[in-house]
Length: 520
Image 1 (cartoon, rainbow, N blue to C red):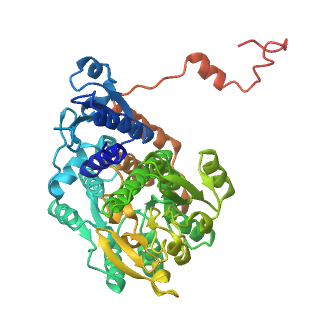
Image 2: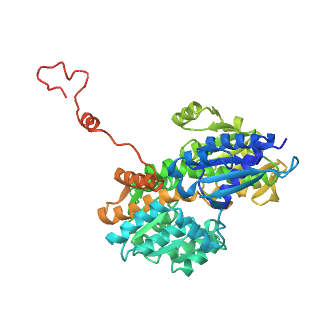
Image 3: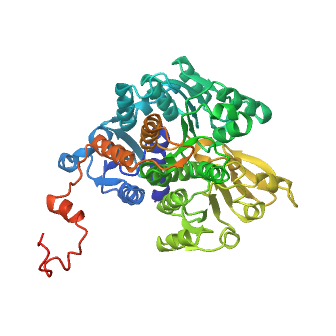
């Protein structure tokens, strides 16, 4: 019998890899040409289990069962995923045909095609950007985007440009898709940085980007905000403000603010619910774990039934753990925060010290803190990868310069073996979903970038004082309602009696017992 679990996993990873779309929340129909065939039936069951564990809504039906198709939720619309399984004979490998909205998965083609495909699946960002343009909120403003440059970021730049802003983009050498950069330049957006830069040349390119002079800076990791404070403080004073979209970027900015060093207003975009509850948990979880599984598959290793240690149980760690568990890994968590450690335990994961739990395991750092995977921990692990994304999160220098020193032997794309320990090192400790894949799924970045766009308008209108500021909760509500509408869904509304009760401060237990109170 075929390895139906591996087959199911590969089908799901193929969908994500070919489209860069999200699994969680998607409606999926699974059918088989001969449902009574043992392998096909087993694969259908395993696909159903795995998709459900990953957060998809599964409808199972015969390929020709129109009644079951009609019973599916109307919210599926054109983004319904159909998986049709077939096998030509008893010894044939199971084949899967994937349909999106009733048509074969589109070939995204070149960089322009990938940019346009991303735009088609970013309705919430389009809606928010349209409002900016209609209100003239960013007309004539100079906006710098310092983020991973791939198709979704390109769409963010194009949307701001269409709304009237003058936009330039910078990306670090290991975070730039050269073909997307070239396509964006051809569409009139300035792009600085190159995948060929390093050391002082990289620093010079980043400073040249800042010297363009911006009114607003959108940053990822706060690297450019911090560099400007170090080497170009005169530019910082010209800013209306900045947005920061990562936990690892906000931590040093808050330190700077406490020390009186921060000299600009910063909106903590990362902390918005519509960013961190979705981007980190579902987006980073899916894209990092699938990139890890793709890399390990190339060297004949599966995530399934492997001990896996997740370092850190913030929103990223939570998502990484959930996706590893859905693929069948035996997940444990090491966390220095006792509250988060207890959350991991209550989510069903074993907790403990990394040195003990990491031996022989797939170790994934989700902290965004340098040296989380020490050289000693790496030597005892079966494989190491990074989902947090700051330089040095895996102490690769310590691993290669230690006593004994390790030597990296290439095995496959994004996979090397550290000898003599034998540890598999994935993409040299780079943020695995960026350096070895295409970043977070499109629909997830649609939500994050919609928050970014709304935060830009908030900076322009409110002109907040120097410091790190929380975004108004109204932005979360606006973005969430737009996202629900884009899915074709409807949510409940409170009844008048509920609203009245919510605004009555008195204890309802005693309302009718006092002669001086009216019963409500």
